[in-house]
Image 1 (cartoon, helix red, strand yellow):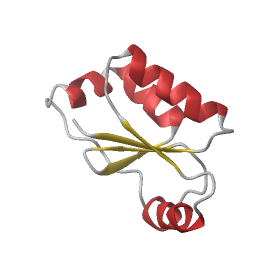
Image 2 (cartoon, rainbow, N blue to C red):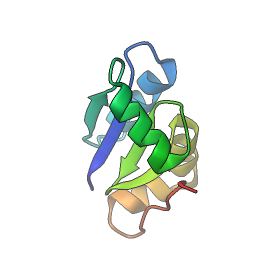
Image 3 (tube, one colour):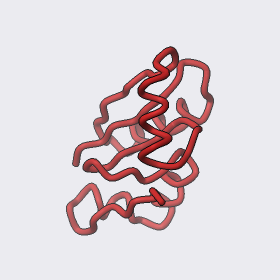
Length: 92
């Protein structure tokens, strides 16, 4: 599974999302958009959200930390990582 997480350096939810992924031993690519207005605007256009982190699983925007944590608690994150389930987009 390809995981990409868009973060800022000053975001506690970003740190929590990265920690959760590391605890689950799920490798990810981090994109720091702290000073990148163009990337932030693209994320808003793709997800409808202005907040970070924004997390993509196999190219599908699944939301932020709360959404990732909910997937993990339900066992869906493990199923997605194992290829047993497809991620669902939060984009409107």
